[in-house]
Image (tube, rainbow, N blue to C red):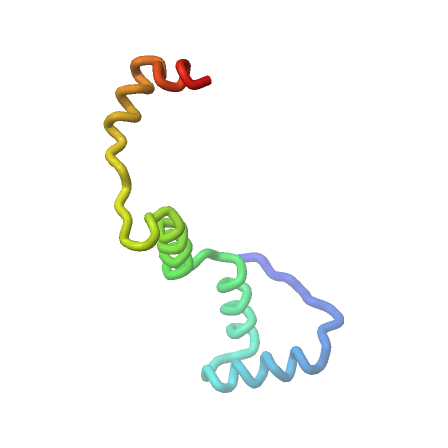
Length: 87
């Protein structure tokens, strides 16, 4: 594992880190490690939440349903004749 040194931390940050560590029942170093991990590494919950939000934005609104895409696929395979006529 690698190590880092963080210089010139404000005393209030150190006090807050110490308070959080004490409340969680572990060392300041372990608390800092947990904070950094949460900030940098995606959690399973975070990934699931981002996926849920992405899927929600793609859902039809107000109880509507998606249209059947079969006709669009057929037109695409046929060279989009309707699009050529309109355009």
